[in-house]
Amino acid sequence: MHPLRAPRRLADLINFRLQRCHSLSGAPVIRLLEGRYGITRREWRLLATLADHGPLSPSELAELSQLDRARTSRAIGVLVEKGLLRRQVHAADTRRARLTLTPEGEELHAQAFPEVAAINSQLLDALDEPTLEVLAKVIDTLTARAQQLNQELVRDVKAERQSGGSRRVRGAPPGGQV
Image 1 (tube, rainbow, N blue to C red):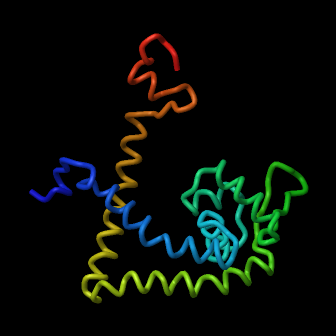
Image 2 (tube, rainbow, N blue to C red):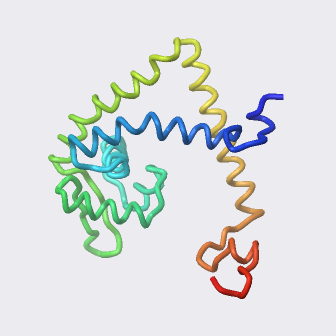
């Protein structure tokens, strides 16, 4: 049986292997974004998501970017300060806002995207077209299965991070000190 199906060590876990690939292949993108454009990978993801989808609420942006709301909120503030993002507060309800790229944000995206896409293409040069087709199908299949598992597991196990859920499960350390 393949080690991915019956993992015996960390390097056999699919998530570990995918994360390692992501970290290694993302390093040149991070250097490019931070060095040439002065933005983080998270900020880039938000800009690119807005470029793809148009104006969004902060919660829509967080969801589409696959980022938690707190980190998204901080990154939005930084992008507004950098003049790359515009936050338009709803007149009737100041808790609601719409986010759009500024002309400077659109320009940054237009310049950076081809360079990020070129790095992506260089990584995929390691695969021939039939293998790339299989990879795309495999990623889609695994993503659909991960969504299904998330829905099933959310019903079974609720993380209680704010109340120290991991301590509750494992118990407090000896002496009751946390």
